[in-house]
Amino acid sequence: MTEPTILTERDGACLIITMNRPRVRNAFDDAMSEAMATAHDLLDDDESLWIAIIHGAGGNFSAGADLKALARGERATTARRGNFGMLARPSRKPVIAAIEGFALGGGFEVALACDLVVASCEAEFGLPEVKYNLVALGGGLFRLPRRMPYHAALEIALSGEPVDAEIMHRWGVVNHVTEVGDALPRARQLADALLRNGPTALVATKRIVADSAGWTDDQAWDQQLSIARTALEAEDASEGLLAFAEKRTPRWKGR
Image 1 (cartoon, rainbow, N blue to C red):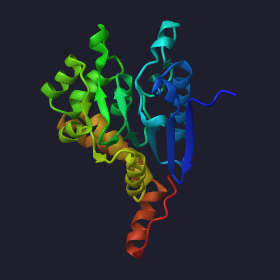
Image 2 (spheres, rainbow, N blue to C red; image 1 turned 90 degrees about the horizontal axis):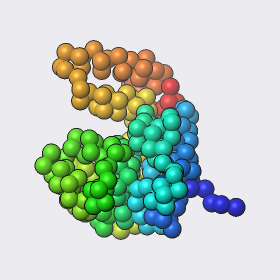
Image 3 (tube, rainbow, N blue to C red; image 1 turned 60 degrees about the horizontal axis):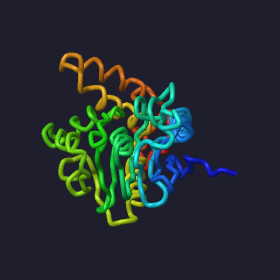
């Protein structure tokens, strides 16, 4: 039987998503894109899952699109979540990228669609599309300059040259740099730290930060309250206050 192109594993309230095409550096074809979209659907729909980590099998994150599949007419896209099953509409819950090896082209755009990035010291990032007279259309050209200074982002986009993890960390695109092989364990530690917090508050906080870029200050006061209301009126809000009063660890339910 053919091995699944996307593997999912539950680790408590964390969903570990593994891109599993190591022979092609976890490049995306139609089947892998659909499987990634299904993994994101699981994360969004299951109240017992509050966060996810995405990583790649075989020592690399992802080299982007599978060029052989493109030549066959595949477009590595899904109707509900866009390219690679997540680039247009990632999960509403926090997602951490754990990166070893290459995160190039669409693979880099997968990382940019995540909320936090942990990378090994030998990881490489880049948008090489211009080298082949192609254009990166998976969100990298607008997400990258939101995460780092304009001129630095433009040099990466126009040169097509790979950039190492230390440089991306210096610019704030990478949150944590690890030794080779330690990206996933460090990402799990980061996920554990986040999971101490209220899950509905994590979702609301992510959305406010993501959506607020286009708000005026006047809009922000109303919009943030509208988004936060779901968390503030959740069972977990009462539990958080009660746990504080009783000096104990909260018992979150995710609702």
